[in-house]
Length: 186
Picture 1 (tube, rainbow, N blue to C red):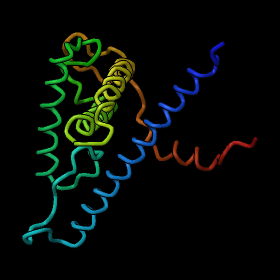
Picture 2 (cartoon, rainbow, N blue to C red):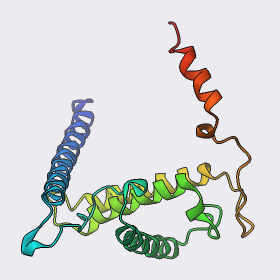
Picture 3 (cartoon, helix red, strand yellow):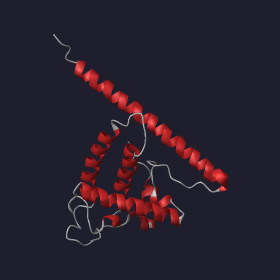
Picture 4 (tube, rainbow, N blue to C red):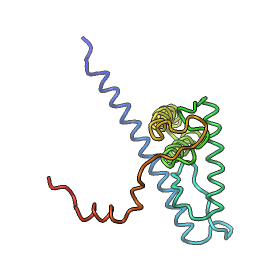
């Protein structure tokens, strides 16, 4: 009689292998970022020029990019990727607000994560490259589902409509009320 738990253990072993691969890839990305950061702090890279090239697949945090030229270059590359993917995967307006996706911060954040994940999966020669495209497609599917929930379909008619909500960070009295309350007593 075959072991009924055998397939479960095989699946766990496979998942463990994937996690090990992800950890190794993350360590390489962190090492590359540390090297890039050290080069920027040192002021000069090879040939005396300042080192500013982003490592493909490294995270992009838009509000932390201070240099306007670098920001504009990355934004252009990113938007070209979004448009290419939207066309390739035949996204509908219900999945991604065509007329204004860039005006929704959460949508931009999700797409940025998908972009850097795509770069990591497709533009690098990695040990786990065989599984990377499949895993990226899984992330893409889940990401597109999340995007549809983030903006709640308010912009499907071809125009941008601001959500009617209070921006949390603009009311100092509200922030003070929360901080003065302290953490809940359990």
